Amino acid sequence: METPGCAGMISVRLFCFVLQGLLLFGFHHVQSGNVLIIPGEFSHWYHMRVIVEELVERKHSVTVLVSSSSTTVKYAEEKGFRFQFFSVPMEEHDIMVMWYNFIDAYVQYPNSSTLENASRMWKIMGTLKDYHSTLCESMLRNETVLDALRQSKFDLVLIDPYTPCGDLLADTLNVPFIVVMKLFFGYSLERICGQMPSTPSYIPTQPVNFSDKMNFQERVQNFLQYIIHTLTFLAQMNIYMKPFYSDVKGEPTVPCDVFGKAEIWLIRSSWDWDYPRPFPPNFVYIGGYHCKPAKPLPKEMEEFVQSSGNDGIVVFSLGSIFKNLTLEKRNTFASALGQIPQKVLWALSGEKPETLAPNTRIYDWIPQNDLLGHPKTKAFISHGGSNGIFEAIYHGVPIVGIPLFGDQSENILFMKFKGAAIMLDLFKMEAKDLVEALHTVTNDPLYKKNMMRISELHHDQPTKPLDRALFWIEFVMRNKGAKHLRVQAHNLTWYQYYCLDVAVFLLAVVGLFIFIMVKTCCFYIRKCCWRTRRKNKKE
Ligand SMILES: *[C@@H]1O[C@H](CO)[C@@H](O)[C@H](O)[C@H]1NC(C)=O
Ligand SMILES: *[C@@H]1O[C@H](CO)[C@@H](O)[C@H](O)[C@H]1NC(C)=O
Ligand SMILES: *[C@@H]1O[C@H](CO)[C@@H](O)[C@H](O)[C@H]1NC(C)=O
Ligand SMILES: *[C@@H]1O[C@H](CO)[C@@H](O)[C@H](O)[C@H]1NC(C)=O
Ligand SMILES: *[C@@H]1O[C@H](CO)[C@@H](O)[C@H](O)[C@H]1NC(C)=O
Ligand SMILES: *[C@@H]1O[C@H](CO)[C@@H](O)[C@H](O)[C@H]1NC(C)=O
Image 1 (tube, rainbow, N blue to C red):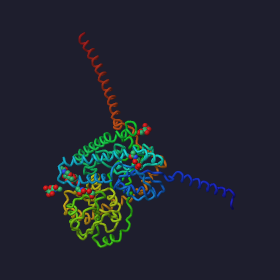
Image 2: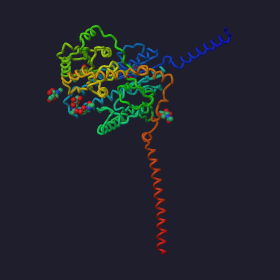
Image 3: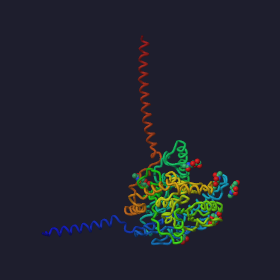
């Protein structure tokens, strides 16, 4: 039999349910946040774009701040986001020339002396510095741009440190910001600005070539490298950046004090790749977030891949700005590739090698992720850019690495120490070395097995890296920051951090104690002696 109370209960339940729904809606969803993105160029933009697209997908309003001389970003199609331009008194062409000179310094002068190399690098670093200060000036001194940004009332700024001064802009706009980056330059930025512990006894510092298991000699080398990185970084911050930061802030400002305000550090690395290390709570690993299951290949490419039969294919790409390979090197590569049984798809722009074996095809651009995910793919020849390495991990393809500069050799070394890659030196390498490396990687089952193990670990995570990144981005917008995750180390001076003041204090206490003890003892001994002497005299 129905009682009248029951209907009442149902309506109460219904009310609760609706209320719960409203609360959930209010608290657990950011209703379209307003995000400003300050991306880097080249591969940095390609991976940032994945986050931009996901933000758009989740109905957030996204603005990408881009310089008028951008080399990559400004050519992107606006799909659901908008660009805010700021003009830079620099031609895109000059910036490309700067990067080409930078790459040339690594690839074109095999016979230079150390001095010539150093002077060339010094010149390039000078233009890089000018480029950086021009970017900073144009971004932070243009009131038109600043006003437009202020009026947009952003909830969050997402910065890639490839473009300098993003932190300072977020600070000027008084908006919380999140950093998206890869661990870099001996972890100086994360260590000094982010308070990430990085003990040189077991954490190898780039560019030394050993793992986290170091013997005494390696630890000495690693320690020296650590000191050099620290000093270089501090010099760069305090000589180049500090005057500008102080000027904009109107008071003496150490750049790290601004950069260290980052709410969350989204790091493009992962534990299946990096060495285990301690992290502050506001550091989150999101490496591999741009990886996706493979899509079907274009028809012509698929036919070529299928024609490889049981031997399979090799995917060869040396990255988006690595175009200045000498013809001699191109020929070396071409002749090596002609000697392997696999078919090769080679992404190469610029001058074609003089002879090309029938098993090799050259493309201006290849769908790298789709190729790496193809069942016929046996190996990946890569310069070691982190985007490509993560795609290889995602799809479980062993690597032949030919690193050039920056973090590339480090990226390959991680995989080499895990038995999933072979590393070659671009300058010392001969055709036979590449043939041998490819033969080993494709025929020794250990490489495939090790790579599959890394790949399995990579896929076995509680949340997908991209979802993790978006969670923290939305978390910061929902909660207006994440300062509760910031370690207090940020507020300590260096001698407080290492407890040097405490040590000095305790030493002083112990010293005082010893001093008093000695004095007291002496006092009694003297008194005692005096008494005995007097006694002796009387007798
Ligand atoms: C500021 O930026 C706007 C828009 O990019 C540009 O039109 C203007 O010339 C810039 N002003 C200065 C002083 O650079
Ligand atoms: C100078 O740089 C080139 C290219 O990076 C390299 O091959 C060469 O060994 C360097 N010279 C010295 C003396 O280190
Ligand atoms: C470097 O030296 C080698 C051996 O002396 C020579 O064969 C080669 O042509 C030189 N390369 C350049 C770019 O000068
Ligand atoms: C590190 O470099 C040294 C000298 O260049 C080389 O002999 C050694 O094999 C390298 N170690 C690894 C693990 O690559
Ligand atoms: C490097 O590439 C750029 C652009 O293709 C070209 O202008 C430059 O001359 C190249 N440098 C060398 C040494 O080939
Ligand atoms: C720590 O420093 C930040 C700025 O650097 C400041 O906002 C905050 O109040 C400080 N926290 C404490 C507990 O002193």
